[in-house]
Amino acid sequence: MVQTLTVGLGERSYPIHIGSGLLGRADLLLPHLPHLPHKRAAVVTNDTVGPLYLEQLRTMLQRHGVEVIAIVLKDGEEYKNAETLGLIYDGLLTHRCERTTPLIALGGGVIGDMTGYAAATYLRGVPFIQIPTTLLAQVDSSVGGKTGINHPLGKNMIGAFYQPQVVLADIATLNTLTDEHLRAGIAEVIKYGLIRDLPFFEWLEQNIEKLLARDADALQYAIVRSCQNKAEVVAADERESGERALLNLGHTFGHAIETGSGYGTWLHGEAVAAGTIMATDLSNRLGWVSAEDVARIRRLFKRAGLQVDGPPLGTEIYLQLMGLDKKVEGGKMRFVLLKSIGHAVVTGDVPEQLLRQTLNACIKHG
Image 1 (cartoon, helix red, strand yellow):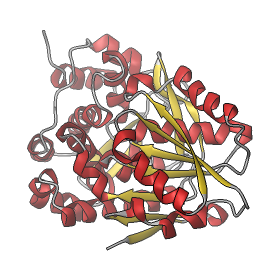
Image 2 (cartoon, rainbow, N blue to C red):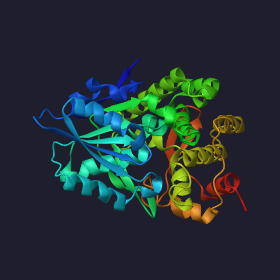
Image 3 (cartoon, rainbow, N blue to C red):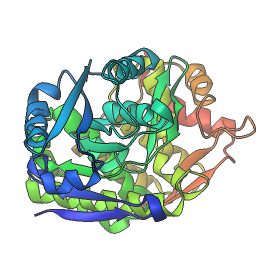
Image 4 (cartoon, helix red, strand yellow):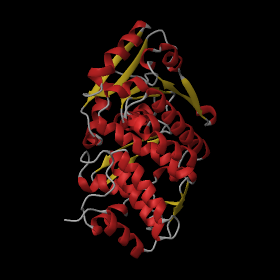
């Protein structure tokens, strides 16, 4: 069964289709390609996803008269940089792609972010389509129009807001996902329950093992519920001037973990899981959530097989890297923290002493 949600952004609204077997559904994709006598599309993927799904997508498009230009990149967060972005431009320019040539991102969050940024900047903007193949991308990065690349000094510091035409989340692609990447996606699923959806958090407590076992019905429910939450937030605050910042629960700490450890050492979702525990601990030190809530949240992440302690980078390194976060305003760090499970807030009023206590308590030592 295909379920369709809409990200409501006026003239730039777009559908999210969620279900199994969507890679073969031309009716969901073709309406979003330009109506030209000679149709072309550039598919950007990587050397892990490409061998699995590129030919299936190419065959479907060619059957309907669409010429496919394939751009295959190396797989990994460590390649989400300006050099790899240049390879996308190289492919587009070599094939003389025009403003009517859509870019289709076939892969996880790294492919989606880089392809979206290329689409936003090539010829000052070409059509963009998301076909996310990881759980993390299906519930988070493919929805909302955040695109970009990493810089050695900070994650996702270079980018643009650029919305896709359509998102096709084919749950069948999760069958080839590694357990490690599945768990990383579950971290972002849990996030939605924590920031704004207590009933969903409670559902996850009851069904986390079903997600780990790749139960199709449970996965579809979790993806739809996550996308509903994100679509509502994005529609209300597209460019992160207010409520959308809540989606970054755990990310200020998590991005420090990714940058400090070296991109690709920790998966994004793994770093967000450990970062969320840090945010929860800090929320407790501020007197907002109870020790029982902290234990409850840690328990769910551990049941999902996720790491709940940050790597031993050292407190000063964490503070330095967190000071480069995109949410810094006026030189002051801002944090997404929990008032309660299901209610997150953004605050800059965090005493450094409490922050240091959290870092000392939540990172491995030695």
